[in-house]
Length: 183
Image (cartoon, rainbow, N blue to C red):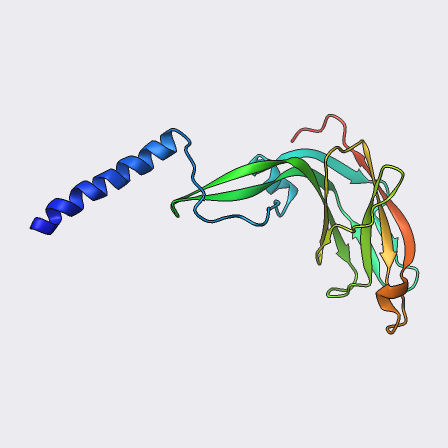
């Protein structure tokens, strides 16, 4: 009975503190965050509030020149990526980043093959860093973004011993921003 007399006030203080933090949007990071997140689809981006723009490819289907592989690009979208902040292990708050991340979804004619990579055109040349490519999407971050985005398809050399040491430049994929599209 004496222990209960101490536990109840402590429990009440914890509940009041959690309520106060939520009401006043007071967030404390207990676990540092080292990576940012993006939405898995355009619809999810719209739903979670990170969506900014939509981009359509002028041409959707591309065949690699040195390999038997085709790539089909889909509608791309621009969004703010975010960090998740843990609050006392009970709540999670999303903090949107100011920079813009563009997600370019695509489908390959053969899965689990990395015979190509993509580079974004920025300013007067293609970037040295290729961005992040996954099995079915490519992501790249921008400070500012225009009405047109160009991606260069880079192909792995067909001779395995050479591979990525002597890659070749392929086609250019051009995306244009959708005008007056509703979210």
